[in-house]
Length: 114
Image (tube, rainbow, N blue to C red; front, side, top):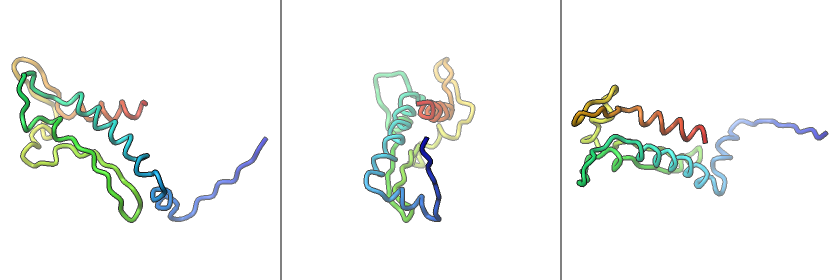
């Protein structure tokens, strides 16, 4: 039987998130979440693609700060397309129900399960 002694020091998180390869480690889950959100985002079922489709405005932002590398999934950063985020319960389009922000919760839950 082996014994291990773990001790945490103040600022250990900052040192950990500054290490080599941490950028890739925090980017991978954010990219998965963005892909899930894009695949389940409400969209029109037409042959045309519109500039304000939600899936076109889901981006991953990776940046370093004083605490290390951070990755964020940005949903509709353009203020002109925030309409879908503001519809909590969803809406009806052409006779079919379109979910509101519930696709984001589903994307987070799916990424969490994997």
